[in-house]
Length: 131
Image 1 (tube, rainbow, N blue to C red):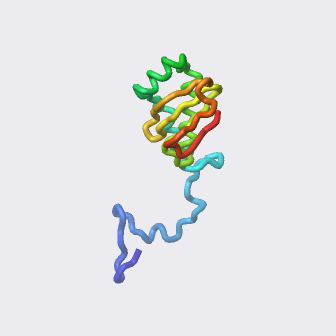
Image 2 (cartoon, helix red, strand yellow):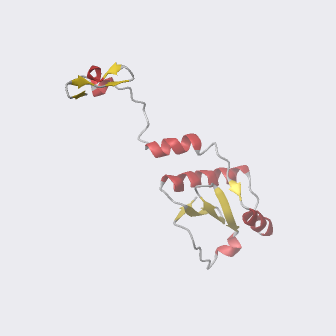
Image 3 (cartoon, rainbow, N blue to C red):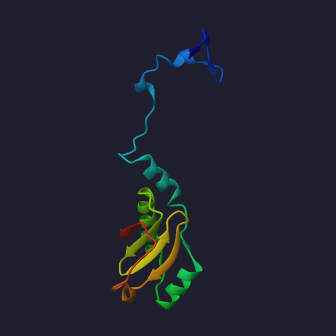
């Protein structure tokens, strides 16, 4: 870049070296059409373990909800989907169970079994993921 007749340098490389750079010279990775957010979430999201709040733990015990590896995986995938859409607090429906999840903290706040789902009203959520 030239300002007042002087070439401005970045990291000791003359800026004018880049003025004729062809955009095709830039190396691109194949992303299979995924957005940056999807790729980022897949890299960091799957490595993060979901947390269970004390309240959710009590409700799961009362309602005989077992947190199997398969169920954890489904909840994790649902969290990733909700996070990709910008959801903050989500209702996650998995099989015959429902979970209220804080997406940012990846924390299950409470849990419901199929018995409690009928005629229930879910508040303080801004999204839902049905698995």
